[in-house]
Length: 259
Length: 378
Ligand code: SF4
Ligand code: SF4
Ligand code: SF4
Ligand code: SF4
Image (cartoon, rainbow over all chains, first blue to last red; front, side, top):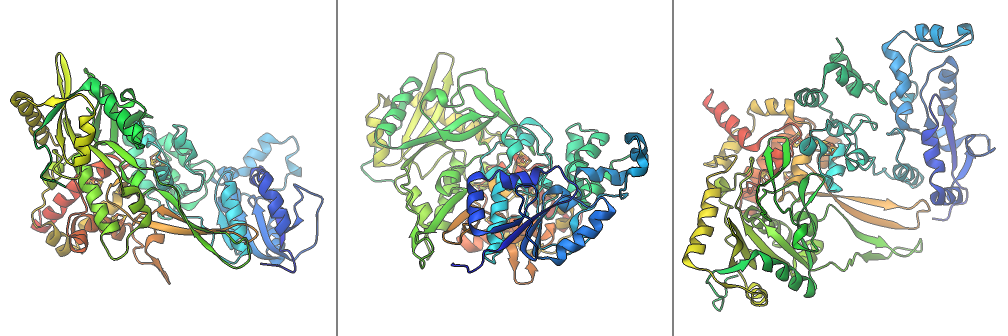
């Protein structure tokens, strides 16, 4: 497919830890291929490139937490043909969405010496709450193979192979022994979207839910089973309130167990 | 299988000679795979020696619970089936079907030619022989044969094992699939543990089995040894952890397509797909086409799929089975009813895996009971 013009890619950062952008930088070998086929036009994290838009594909990391973010995301949308959010922050508000359950002004007054300089919103919200998003890539952080898959798919006009089913399916395909059934270790895999390759169960840990809710998550039934395994309500709140605390299914489940 | 020249007499193989049998299979070029302990479960993997087997291990199983336990003897096969089934070798979870080798200049499809090994399966349970026979029907007997399955299935050597221990979720006795192997094996063993002796009573299923047995020390089984082996299998039949009431089951499920009970089970079901992944007869797959960034290279991969995903029934406009209720009903009705119309057998062999490995202990035998009860209005 000889292309006269290389498609232009932009990578934007909102409130986040940079981990997802680092996944792109972590693609070492593949990054050379990415750079060969895409014009990395705007990527402050990686280069001084600051070419002007419009861009064919914008990858957006981070959540909206300040009045400035609210304006910037509108501008990003205007200059982007496709807008893909990457990671739990951009897709569900991230770990910083824990503020949504509390009064943020109280934190600000405790944490900062000069709270009057802090301009922040009461909530941390996903990008899709503000603008139309073409695709949401899950994970905290994202999986680099999935990122490359999404970039390839958008460049070639096909649907990305990013299945929204449970972690359990990829766990079983890998032949991992189920930690919940065989060890009694609580696992969020059945309500969590696949994509990580079931890393935690592969290391005998329960899934932490960092890819957010699967397509039809039955959090209520899983919580009942966890209780049966001896997990207390307060720990159920914590389990659902991590990287994807503000994702609807996890949010409601955590609230249901709050006393 | 039964060729008339076969020795129909049972033989006896001492435990200490089992290694020779594995060695002979290895020397004949088989990839010898069988049960072994990994991550606190009995899984199927490569076996180098008899000591790789789950020596002295057993398991306790119930809905959503599996615990490996020590036995007080040195049994090699003293466990019930674990999470793996032989489909992981015959119908692997992920395979590449083809790749395009042109690198952007046109399109030339290269079918996968993986150089599939010849497998020798060690310790195949009777229910699993039935499961393999069912997958044969699905993947080889129709108009379209699955070349990947066929390549793996050809030249398979099967060392079956009559069950001496029924698991907490086993119900092969109600499905008429066990606990004794009746077909589909080259050799079938019954493991006998006595105070001062550990041996196997061997039944020969094929000429190849007889040939291999001839290469290891064995002798004809005595009346007493035969009776002991029969007794073991009979005792296992009486120890089934579950029971399935199969009378009129196909019509029962067809009649109850609209039963309110499906919503009850849907409240519990996680739509996680574990039951279909562990089921030794579930065969469904999806295909994923991938390209590289340059768009110069394409591949098609096939992966195990499950009727519990939304994509499974996605057609133009959305998923046909959007509700978890419809998906659970599809799974159970396919296993126990529509399978019969489609392939002439039940799709369930009573292995109990879907019960044990369901993270929330949904039990297919109980669900059938519940549908029966709901019909009686009690
Ligand atoms: S370990 Fe977790 S992700 Fe894997 S099958 Fe069990 S519940 Fe699902
Ligand atoms: S439906 Fe369940 S019990 Fe029946 S063969 Fe499949 S996994 Fe085994
Ligand atoms: S029960 Fe579901 S996954 Fe299993 S064979 Fe039937 S449709 Fe396929
Ligand atoms: S029946 Fe159990 S294993 Fe199957 S999809 Fe539902 S919760 Fe998962």
